[in-house]
Image (cartoon, rainbow, N blue to C red; front, side, top):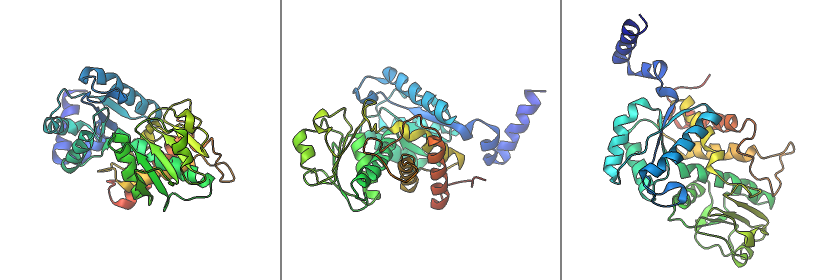
Length: 316
């Protein structure tokens, strides 16, 4: 009674109405976490087997912080078409695809191909980093009385996945993006440590985000952050991805667009404000474990998805 007639009824229901898959299977809350091992957590080409812990860590992070059933599925191939086809053929189980530890620019080529083929969100992990960068600069520039929209932001290392994603989203946020830090309002460095002379060459009140490890020589900038936990302002995708995915899944989004990412950045930036709306120079971002962070980001993403028309359902 539990298996044969019960399962058969659900199978037939889905056969007649595919949309019931969202209600009667694990699909609605499931994300596929994929790597090919070509750039494992910034350590380089370690191979597909070595990418499994990275995929597992991302899966656990999404589960623990956002209640998402994420599954690690490394693909043992370096052929873009084969990877895309493999993911697409397995996608019926999932409401989203999370690409991690894949070398650039291939990760974006794979994302774009999947985005065109599937009707579920496909996200490169470094897009979460880009959202965190936008949020950090919104608050970091505000410390000196500046606004990200219209500011000149130097992004070095734009050939990295993080640099590519950050430059694109900063432009969407209204910043002028350049590769030359001289005179810029902010510097986001993905290509190595930032020297004291480079930091001093920024405009007054300049913000330095060192995204390739600590830059002790630049720590005297008006606002300084890095991608390491020891930084007073840690800029990491971990601040973003649980809430971004939670919001996208809640509305059964068909994609993750710039509006959703910018909404996530706004929510992340706002979560660091104190009761008076102020932000300290050493607290431009909250902790990854901050109370309500996932809920705040998810709510902003849900609203943006509905406004963009990429939501299948509207939350109650």
